[in-house]
Amino acid sequence: MFLGEYKHSLDPKGRLALPAKFRAKLKEGAIITRGLDRCLFVFGKTEWEKLAEKLAALPLAQANSRAFSRLMLAGASDVELDGQGRILVPDYLREYAGLSKTAIIAGVMNRLEVWDEKSWTQYKSRTESASDDIAEQLGALGI
Image (tube, rainbow, N blue to C red; front, side):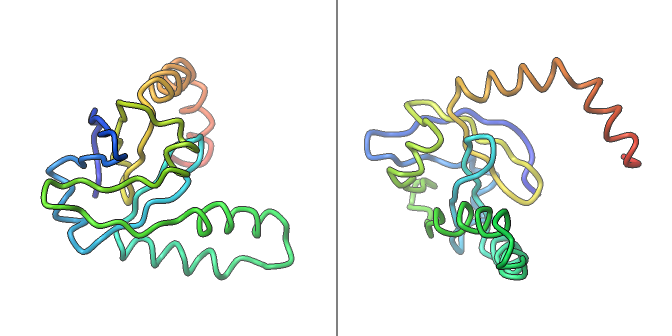
């Protein structure tokens, strides 16, 4: 399980060091792809395979299914950790997420999310200010 929030810098080549506590879970490689809310998702191989199976099962005839599958699959890239625990974030994904020098890596259960620091701060501020409303809506779902 991935949990926590960490600040790391991207080097000029687009390499991003992952938190040391997550590296063992990703040592066999990972997949990085476009996420939601203009962040990137990083999945370990096993979690990625589970998601890919679910995406493959979506109805091809529905436009939203095709669009979501394209977002997740066409933007995906295999990445491996180098000796210093870094992954290379492809240019097109750095551009999608607006990544500059500093990124926030958030552990969100089965995946990591990679955010531009400014975008993360804005997102977190909005979410925190709406937390009572969010909790009430999720309470209706039994959470």
